[in-house]
Length: 317
Ligand code: AMP
Image (cartoon, rainbow, N blue to C red; front, side, top):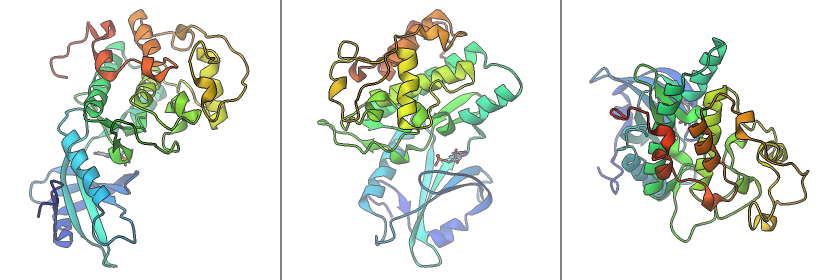
């Protein structure tokens, strides 16, 4: 069966017998994630059981569209590969979808934590490689009109043998069209959330992902979150303390955003004060990603051409 290119096969009851569930490895936007073995090939995969809307008969068209989008995006080597989709019924007779992904043994959050636990830092060359791969994956999403909107170390999967990075959890990504549709602003994890989202902008774009990429960049260098806010206000204040409180000169139109009010006045600090171990070109790239005005923020594609990456061996990336 081919559901408009999603490739959701019928008969998941039997299809699910094709996999041996090994253990639960996580819980994401879609539902539970299991490590599993494909009985026919012996290959280890990640199985994501999706929650479907209880009122729906079968698979809703929005889900089917998201799956075909995921399938298309996962052609990129820096996006986690969707191998297959199995459709079937659970015991209550409801439709269940199993997304079968390639299995990855680590994620950037775990990786940073293990490095920190050893009292070490990630080698500058590794940071550069991970950042390049991240920009490449994000550039691919953006070139296909998809925003991720929830980039964070937790959903950047890694293969620790090859140090390949792959973006996961594109579940909340929606295709955007021009003119931009409205998005709810309740999606990103606070620490990686762009200031325009925090300030209530309803029309946001690729810059929201680049902000998250910047926060991840700094965190790879310091092993600490750049802006660890525990509320929306604290998140903004963290940002303002480092980058200066924005005003109409720094960010034209900021005063018109719905959540804008008067904030304490801070002047911008040099980025090197927050990320002292980053080389000069890296600081420059970081500053281009942390522009207040979203349209001034460097794009993922441009970031890949930044001189910071000049000395990176890109042969296998
Ligand atoms: P997600 O829904 O992508 O946020 O997944 C939730 C958690 O499940 C992640 O933080 C990972 O630890 C794990 N996970 C997701 N996808 C994979 C995968 N392809 N391979 C291994 N673990 C995964």
